[in-house]
Image (cartoon, rainbow, N blue to C red; front, side, top):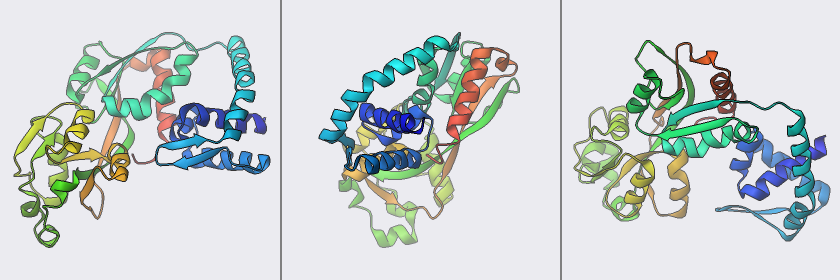
Length: 299
């Protein structure tokens, strides 16, 4: 069975091109996936992947092994699935598009593959929580803590935030003034925000500098993918979750403008109506996400 586990992990990395994605699909931590790959490579006596900034690129030996073992492992999974009663029902899930795509939906993919039906809605936290209380959604991944007493919220994961901008704008910040008077040093930089009330940016400024940002706001768009694209294009600076910003910072397209001594965190909650877990499908998704989130660490 241990050999099958190693091969199953190898196949997930080969198909996804990413150790992180493979860890999500296997329900493992990334170090565990790395360790399994290392053991398999030692056993075979040659590397199966080349690690690059773009992910895990298979070697010729890796491609050959995937061709040989892939069909057999798929047949084993099919045989097990045929003998195992899968989950049934439909769960209506809402949350921010970015964390759903990066963590939540990959974690739920095995349940969907076994028969669970998911209907997913993106949107702002308050709108989604309203939909939850109005019974239009069953579960919400929320960036704010619900205040409605009919909603039960469980902490799911913490997000860490970075203040980032394009190199051209980063070069206009005086490092001496930034250390002494950070608000003044950054005040000339236009902001790109997720909403008019600057929820993410405002939280960063209050946490780090003790006040709201005095900066002009150039673009407001309720989608972190668009915020990231606009910042990279040079329209301003913004505050983004580390898991979302780090890959772009690594390419050199963004710079971190301020190093926080204690990185600001925001807790993401998994919200459900009181009594909502009486539905077996909703309870299954709720339990599955909480279990998977324990392997994520801080995002």
